[in-house]
Structure formats: C-alpha cells, structure tokens
Amino acid sequence: MPQQKYRALILDDEVFLGKVLSQNIMQRGSDAIAVTKVDDAIQELYSNPYDIVVSDIYMPDRTGEDLFNYCLEHFPDLPIIFMTGNPDIEMAVDFLKKGGYDYISKPFLIDDFFKKIDSVLEKAWQRKKEKHLLSDLKQLLTKRVEELQIFRDAIESTDDGLIILDTEGIIVEVNPGFERMSGLGKRQILQKHLSVLQKNLLPNLNFSEIQSILANEDQWEEEMKGSRANGETIISSSSFFSIKNEAGNIFAYAALIKDVSKLRRVESALIESLEHTTLAQEAIIFGLAKLAEFRDRDTGFHLERIRGYSKILAEELSKLPNFQKEITDKFIDTLYRTAPLHDIGKVGVPDHILLKKGKLTEAEYEIIKTHTTIGYQTLSSIRQQYGDMDFLNMGIEITYCHHERWDGNGYPRGLKGPDIPLSAKIVAIADVYDALTTNRVYKRAFSHKDSLQIMSHEKGRHFAPLLFDVFYSAENQFDNIRKRYSSMSQSISQNQGRIGSSL
Image 1 (cartoon, one colour):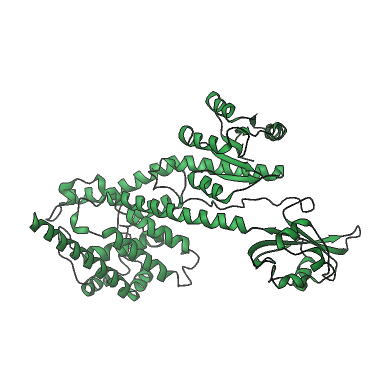
Image 2 (spheres, rainbow, N blue to C red; image 1 turned 90 degrees about the horizontal axis):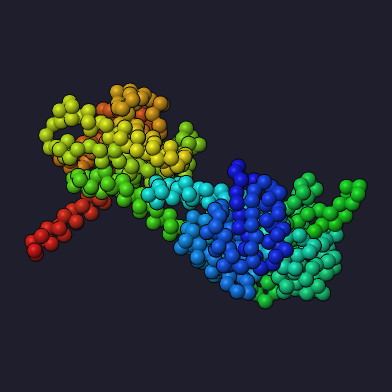
C-alpha cells in the first residue's frame, strides 16, 4: 500500500462493481466514492479533491474516454486507470501517449487491482515531483512498460489456455481457451505427448527440462514465439505447475498458456513513443546548459565536444577491471547527458570578466572561480525541492568538482585524489583538453600534439594518473572529435561570411 492515504473516484455503470471496489479501498484505510455516470464523476471532481480515478471505458451514455479527455484539459495532473473487458490496442496506445497511467482488463483479482492503484499513485507522485523541473532537469521516465493484462484464475479463464498433463507428459485435457488460441482441436492433441506442440505453437518446449525444474521449484515459465494452426504468429507466455496429492507426490502437471501478442505490440508502440519523448527531453536539457556559454562565441560546440570526450574516456575506463562495477551503461549515459552542465554556474559571472581578453586580476579570477559554487547551489536547491535523481546527483558532482585537482590544489574545496568524484575527474580531463585545443578570448588554440604534451606534465598533479593514461591511449578518438567539430565551425563561419557579403 502507498505510504499515505488517498482518495479514489470509481466510475463504472455496474453499480455492484463500483461498490465492491470502493468498499475494499475504504477497508484498507483510504477513501473512495463510486458513481455510474461521467457527468456525476465530473461534478465530484469539482466538489472534492481526488488522488486517482479508476474508470470503465465503455458505458451506455458518455464513455470513460470522454472523462479522460475532460480531465486532460481541466485536471491534467490527475492519474487515471482504465478498466475494460475488451482492450483495444489503438485506444490503449493513444491513452498512454496522452498521459494516461495504466489500464486493467476485466475480470481481475482485487489484489492485482491494488497493485495497479499503488503503482499508479507512485508514478503520479513522481510525475508531480518532476513536472516543474523545466522538463529537462528531471530523471528519465521511470519504468512505464508493465504488464497490461492480468493472469486470471487458470481454471475459470475463458481466454487463456489450460493444458493438463500426466507424469509422462501426455496431454489429458485442454480447455476451450487453448483451442481458440492455438487453432488446434482436442482431437488433434489429446493423448499425445506435449512435444506435439513443439512443431508450431511452442517450439522451445522441453518436457524433460520442465519436469526436472518442477521437481525442486513451484513454477517453470518462459515466453516464446510460435505460430497458430493457421500460420499466424503468436507470442505466448507459458507457466507450468506440478499438481500434488495429499501425500505431496506429483501426479500431474498443469500449464497455463497466455497469448501476449497484443500486449507486446502495445509495449513496442509505447517504448517507441517514450524514446521520442526522451530525445525531446534531452534536447531541452542540452538547451539549458547552452545558457551558460551563449555569450562566448569562441567556444562554439564546446558542450558537444565535452560530452563526446567524456563519453569516450568513460567507455575506455569501463574496460578496466577497477572500473567495471562503477562505470555501467547507465553511468556512461548519465555522464553524457550531465557533462554539458559543468559550467552552468557561469551564468552568474559578469560579461566584463568572462569575456575579458587580457589577463585576469586576482580578484577577477576569484569571481570566475565562483561558477562552481553557483552551479552547485542552483542544482542543489532543485534537488532539495524535487529529491534525489541520478541526473541531478551527477550534475552536482561535475558542476562542483570539475576544477578540483588530483594533488589537492584545485577549487572550490581543495579535494584530493580519491575524494574527487569519478565523474568530475573525467570531465576535468575533457575540459582541459578542449580549453587547450580551441580558440578562447585570451589565447589561440594549441595543436593536438602540443596539448597532449602540456597535459602530460599535469599527470599526478592536475589529473588522476590512471585516468590520464587511459585518456592518452584514446587520444586519436579525442582528436577525431576535435577535427569533426572544427570542420563544422569553419563551415558555419564561411556560410555566415557569404550571408554577410550578400546583405
């Protein structure tokens, strides 16, 4: 159950079902109201605050989809779960894309109903927590693809397939659901060995293996792709159970075969839509970081290069035994997305200092150094409001610590050696290499070769020795990124020159 009580609105034209669900919710310590019409539901939403709505889809008058569309406009933060006895794939995908949370197929077990409620309330809380994080400083969407249909009671099911086997693997009974699912009639498979299903429907079945596992475990399950009798592709989820007598001896086996083809299509469509959402969010995140450098024209593509350099170095480090546990695929992905935030605190540095062409005074340099603490304070205040997120946590590490040095002579805190976060040590190398190899208002760019030579003197002083060695071994990859973006910058400058001459 959720940590806090909640108030639920149940909409279903079946009066009995509405009462049963609302009573069960109240028995668990929360509050619920059941109504039978969409208009009554809307009136309730204006009269009382609700944390969640559970609505039937198909009703005689206005539908649950009408309520959902109304809530999108007037109660956009209100989570909604659809109930349906006839799931429609296009409707389900559209519902989820528009911001719906989940749906549950009738009939369902009450425990499964509450699992959905708890899961959706948790996701709704997370959405509210992330909503005002500029749509970019928030954790990537948490796992959204869940089971969209529930296993029903094996014997009473009219849709799922049920097979009964003897201890030799001979099929002694199948239910109508299995016949419809497979396209095979009883006469074709009764009194035949389970292996008869390997030809088309369940190609990966191995009764001996299943029997061996069920001798020690309660269940064997696997999802496999096969074909029905008519050749149509089917994805099925198979669960085998042993049936025991009063003495505890196995005298038969039962198999529940569930057709999950529609479910996988829904998941595939949802995953595709979430991938597009993730790309859009990442673009916004990158745009936010651009605010910190838009004033400095000499650092074009700086953020693109920094994230590319950081990713290469992290990938090479992940090949070493010392780093394989810490540098996971998730670490690399988060680093790639957060590295551009390293200088976000420079938005608080005045132009006359940030863009100064001459040497900085000691006082001016101290102001420049404050960009690390400005960035840290900004991201920390967001984390304090919205809670821990991988994106924010690593962003804070990098923003605050990318100017620390291995020998302890960096800033702002003078951290030393292993006290410096790994993410910041990686970005430090990327940032220095980029600073050396590009034009800045105060200097011309050094060559790739000269930059490596300059940086080599800082191994064990500015840079972690092992990280620098890995960087040096991957220097060709760094040079390739530098050349690529240098060509892009030149191309842009040439185009701008042509445009200017034509005006």
